[in-house]
Amino acid sequence: MHPVVFVPSYMFSAGGNRDWYVAEPEVDVDNMTYEELLELGERIGKVSTGLSEAELDNIAPPMVVSERRAAELGSQECCICMSSYEEDEVLRELPCSHMYHRHCIDRWLSDTHICPICKGDVREMKHAQECGPE
Image (tube, rainbow, N blue to C red; front, top):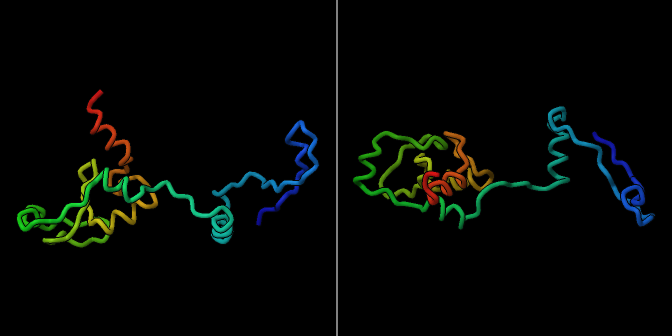
């Protein structure tokens, strides 16, 4: 457990205000226990670098698998759920050309903006596609 230190605010400002603020010592997450990490998460709340639904739709519009496309995909699987792609399922193809079930990748990308396979930043890849080679 990390101690909480009360520090007079006049130590931080030239105004001489005598209010008290709570200051936490530097947090070293690499050396924290699981319980300490959970407590820290509760204190700071959810931090997400993920994508909104609108960003997802712009970066990788959903597509329904046609009979022909299902045959082309053959035995390929979504690496998140490990299920093959079937006709009439909704997929997303990321700018890096990796394909996933929409419900699988949407959940993943709501927390991060990194492709699970190539670890590429999907926002940067989409921007590069739109701008072309430099």
